[in-house]
Every structure is written in structure tokens, then in C-alpha cells.
Length: 297
Image (cartoon, rainbow, N blue to C red; front, top):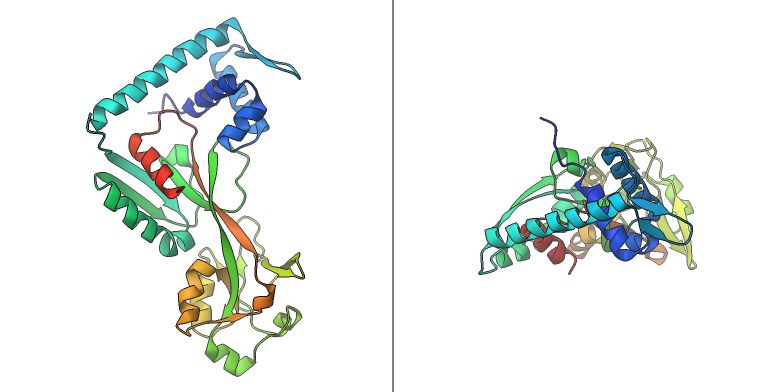
């Protein structure tokens, strides 16, 4: 059976745009762009078969239908909030189940410690954690949250940055003993590099460097290329198969234990962002809000 209320994200956008008074101010509140919000309102109007907002270059105003719809949707969201409070009980205990999708890098090396602290504070919240490099469709597949790498797509989802994860270039002592240690970025062309092929482009993910305060991207080439799971480059580097670039939170322990060696530290300083994303529903459960607030601490 088709879901009857899969448009609630657009309803939430409508309410927030009206409350903020403009697409620009609403986009700041929701960490997205005005064009994304405009499309959400257009979808909602098409679904309802009527105009809700009058748009001009200077201001927004509600149509008569828009005023009626706003009043009723606000009342509906208030009922949902009240229902959550009743379910959670007067004691304020947070209960429920949260489905979270996360990439393998973050899921194996960053998230476990965070979730250990969360479950200690919220023992009655159940967590379903899908660790995969596939970008799931949150709404269609029933996920509450996802942690994703890179710039967020132009969508109706809310995105909140978790951190900028620092990158490090590494190789094993065994590899360096056989092949020598690169001293410059140009030297990398004469070494066995371990590129990861991005599913979205079919091309190697560039390695990011900082040289003299300037940002530089360098495309690694190699006879061994890793597809699907970026952690494969780390496993190959551990085995002495070549050089890889990965996140500091993955390799700092390996470097301290001598399993891997950091290369070209003078070119370090670059990072990639990880963000927490979720649908802009005012009806997010108390458990989901608790996970969001905890991860953003």
C-alpha cells in the first residue's frame, strides 16, 4: 500500500517558510537552499491543486487557502507533539526505535564510541544501524537519519555538519623499506598508489593536499583500484601494497603503534565534511531528536 503522508517534509517546509517570512531565512534555519524550499512548496501546491503562497521579489503572502492550510497543519503538528509526550510518559523517559544509515568509515571508526555514550544515557532507545556505502533513500526506505560524506545534494533534507575529518597520507613500514619514502607530491607518481573509485563518477577520488597555504588536488593512479568500500585502501596499505589517503580518525592509532607511517606531513591540513541528514518533519520522534541532539554535541 502506498504511503499516504510521504509529503510531510513538504508540509514542514511550508510551515517554516511562513514562520520565517522568506525562503532565504527558512533555508538558513533548515541548512539548505532557497531553491530547494521553493520546489518543496511547488510540489505541495501541485498535490493540493491550489496556490498556498504568493511569491514576489520582496515578500511572501498567504492565499486564503494557504491561511486555512497553515492553521490546520499547525494544529496537526501540535497533536503529534502531544501524542509523543503521552507515549514517552510524564517522567520524560525517551523510548522508541531509530533507524540510522552510516558509511563504513564513520560506522566502524567514529560512530561506535558516540553510540556507546548515547546508549548509556538513553538505555530505552533501540538503534538499527545500517553500515553501508550506499546512499539510502531515507523516506522511501524508512530511515530516520543518515551520516554522509561530502557536500549534501540539492534535496529537501536537513543537513547538519558533524565535523570536518582531517586526512592523512600513509603507507606501511614494509612498503617504504622496499620502495623508499616519497619526499614530495611529485614523487607519488613513481610509487604504488591505492586509488578509490567513486561510484558517482567512476573516477579515482582525488587526494587533497595543502602546499604553501594553497589547496591542491592530486589524482592517484595505480594497478590496484578499490571499488565500493573505501576501507579497502586501508586494508591494502596495511598489507604493504601501497600508499593511501584516509581519515586521521582511522589511522592515528595505527601510526602510534607503528603499523603505518605518515607521509608528506608538510602537505597535511585538508579535510572532508561528514554531515547528519534527516527529513524536515516536525513529527520527528523524541528518540530521533535525542540521537540528533546527542550526535551534534
